Length: 277
Image (cartoon, rainbow, N blue to C red):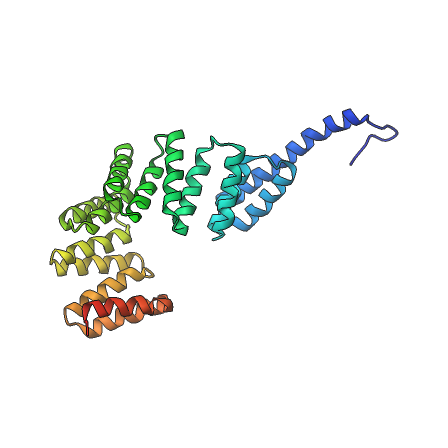
C-alpha cells in the first residue's frame, strides 16, 4: 500500500481511500474480461473475471459474464454455478436466468431449463430467444403444443428468425405433419439460404413425402454448405441405402465415421432400421 512520504493516514481515511481503488480495479478487470469475451478469448476472459471478483466479490454481472465464458469453454457445471451465484446476488437479472436455462438445457435438465426461461420472460417479456429456447426444451419434454406456442410467439416478435421456423418444423416433423414441416423449413431457408441444418431437416420431410430427388438435393446442399455436418451424410446415406445405391451409401457412412468414430452404434441402429434382419 502506498502512503504519502512522512505521513500516516488515519484508519478511517485509509479505508475510505482504498474503496475507490478496489472499485476501480474491479471495473478495469471486468472491462478487460468483457473485451476478451467479445473476441472469443474465453480463457483470458475467465482470468480477468477472477481478478475482478477478488476486488468485488458481490458483482452479479461479473459472475454472469464469467458463466458465459465458462459455458463456451464447455465447463457447463461451472457456468451454472456462476449463474446461480449471480442470481443470488441479483434475482432480477434476466440474462442470468436465460443463460442458466441454456446451460440446463444442454445438461438434459429440461424442467430446470423451462423454469429458468419462465423467469427470464417474466422479467423481460420480449426476449425472443427465451421463447425459442423454451420451445426447444418443451419439445424435448414432449409438450408439442407448448413448443409450437413458444415458436409462434418468437416469430410474432421477430418474423425473420429462421431458427424458430426450423424448430417449429421439427415439432411438425415429429407429429408426422410432413407438409407443414416442409413449409416451415422452406421459410427458414428463404430467410437464411446458408442454413445447412434446415436443408437436412427439409430433406427428411421430403423423403417422408416420397420426394426422393428433392430430399437428395437438400442433403447435397447441406453437405456443400457444411462439409462436417454428420447428419447430412447420415440421412443421405440411409436414403441411398433405401434406393439400393449401396456404394453411395457406404461412402456417406464412411464419412460419418471419419467425422465421429463414436457414431458407429448410432449408424448401426439406423442401418438396422432400414435393413432389419
